Image (cartoon, rainbow, N blue to C red; front, side, top):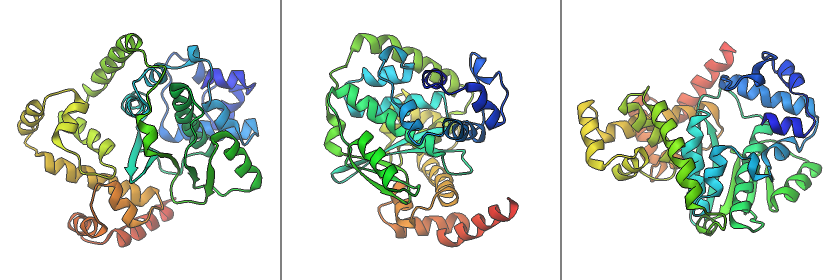
Length: 329
């Protein structure tokens, strides 16, 4: 991102000053910031650049030699589906964030969920993330992939609509409940002409090693629950899926959970409860949409489970706790 700021003539010191962060932050080999500080940087970029397209410009990199290891692993993947799975898996290395890929009927919805966020994502960050995904899809397939539509929580006008339609090549909806980039589901299985098994054999093991090192600080229970949160959307995860994601056998997964005296079903319930609270507090999703994202077949099943957890309905819990958050603020 810092290189892109330099390329675009945006003074990095001005960005850090506006964000209220140390002037030397970008000079460090590896900088650590909180989610709030990360958001502040993107708000600052928007203010300093004074360019509504700045997020799209930062997220679009044509020079593959400038790609970071995660983007390299994605662009050399077998297909767009494989690329999205790698992006979602390896993004854990840089940010407490889920890249949710949800297939519903003939469509596939891509959504970025910042797990520790207390506020909506900055517009610049939303644009950057979606431009990044589309850039990988277009470079990988070697074609000008066009999504079905772009859905944005922000309000828009004619100029913004024209800007987004020109970049994404699709219809744009403003004022939606969630930021979504929606593709035809068939696009997921488009083969990447850039697929290179030799490059992946170099890059992927290093990323996997970093993931193992990062996860070493977590209990196995925490690792399983984090994995469940990532794959819950729209379906009930199976044991073998989680085992595959954690790179262990199903037998090893079951044994490790037994050693920690917890069941797979109990962790699914914990993951659902924590995600439910996150969605209710930090999004305006309809309750039936929240139920779907938590892997419930219908809203009533979600309502019953939530009442067992909290002793009240999701709607009443949201009204009470959002109200508390506003009072505290």
